[in-house]
Figure (cartoon, rainbow, N blue to C red):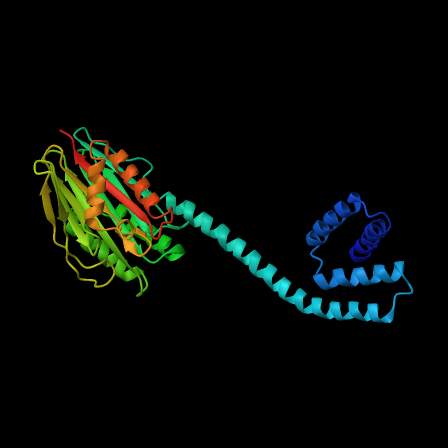
Length: 336
């Protein structure tokens, strides 16, 4: 007996029981039958054909008008069935793509530091939340044997798998650079040449790269078209813009990057962030930089990690829990 014949016999029994007994058991059997035909990948027009054959078996004296109405329904379902099969193909492809994106997102997560290094005289906190499965933001914080801290924060213009591939290139390009090249300006110039050679013309990367020397308490930094950060001067209780002019990575091969320096006194801190922070919005109104500074000030008596976590929660609530862009916020404060 073929699968079709077996389904027809099962359906005949279910329909007979329902027409003669009209009980709950028949409805339950019909629901189970529907699951079976889905598993067997029976098309809608085949189901209509089974129904017509069963009706003719049960009621041989079926009127010609009723029989012809089923023939019309069968023609309708043939067209529907073709569209349904195309839908199933697209659905399966979408599931495959989502599975691949999940793998890429998990791989992308491994690019980020598993823990944040800490210093005896400085406190560091960071939060990075993607707007979707795949993030266009990248950050890294590295401490060498001399307690020297290097910080990278990048925003890849582009989303999805291309951004993940670009992020992997940036990570491994930075990992391959010798330590003596890790001064901010030098690093960006070297990284820019790698990016310019290896990404599509419609992609580019903005980045802030900084280093903190705990021996001198000097924070050195360079920027490549990235959102300016903040420097908080504790003695004056004032936020200043941490401006670093420079062309985004990947646009011009021979770009050079200026290095800036900021001395940190006890209680001073620097804040770096992606443009997803300042692009938080409520309706048509975007978050202003001054509002972000005041929000940070609100929690400045807490640890660095508590500050960035609380700022994120407030902004998440402010925009009704709808992230419009990847959100990365990093804070480094001198403690002693």
